Length: 494
Image: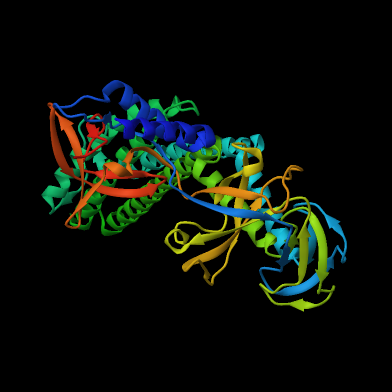
């Protein structure tokens, strides 16, 4: 019991020191303790309920605040220097352009990418939509013309070109000549009567056509009638080719009729092509209008944003900017000089923004990297926190008290007049953020024969459960599998 109370008091103290990190953990522990602590099966068991919580694995080290140090700066790519805007002793602010190489192409590419992004964000201009609408109306007019032309072609081919070849063509058509192809004769005579009726009905529909009509249906109707006329003319042509010459039908007359039917078939074929072309044109114009009205998609905008970011990155590689406020201490580059990438050309000293030197043990170095954020407390100011980021990590080890460590330099992110060189710093480096995970105190973990276990209180019985663990930080261990939220874990395993 005393150990549990001591554990909770320590956890409480850490909340006050670093509430951003330990708040969620300690709340879960306190809740478990006050609700379930002390229960057991006759033993003085200390338990808590496993509750998903946020977990920020961290590396905790100490360090010393040091005076501003020199930072070497260089270009990220080769090129000809077109501008150097500082000299030794110049005071510069964070983000100030110090020097740049020729970058006209990169600036033009960025401007172009930004223009395309703005165009995508603005959507289609009203003028473009109007043009698309006009194209749709023009396509509709072409459809009307094609349908009307198709009717004229069918009417001429069926009624004009074949009328003299039939007796009673509108009521009881029969060929005026004798043919040896009886099947063609029957097909021609039946087809002539059917087409007479179709042309009468279609003519009324064509006369009523306008741009408000269902033009898709009108095109389908035209295709159907033309499709009916084509085999009819084929049957007539076959019957003529097998015609028997007699006193009423000379060979010259038969050949003239065959020529007429050939012309009629060509006319029908051309009309069918016109209908197909008109349909394609209308559908294309309507799709184009729909796209213009829809404007840019989210994918289009995301793509253009990525292009802008890429162009900005390319431009940034041609410029040296001050990473913080400070004083220029060295300038070894001149306008017109050809420089190589990643070589030190300019150095500067930070002004007012101090750094921290810390030595991170080998066991923790793999968990941190340049750019990681950190929270710092200074012994002089108690629990008050200061923000910092890792600026550099030495590649070579430094042996401290027989332990391999790596010198790590952190940069305070803001100036603060209270910070002084030589102050002792307590540093918590957050390595990642995890949300809704199960964590337990490290003391609840039992390791045996290469496996990891925790004890669970279930139905007043203590059960040992094998688990898989994850990240470990500040006396807390992440549980990846083996237990579930809501189960009661024993804090003092037997």
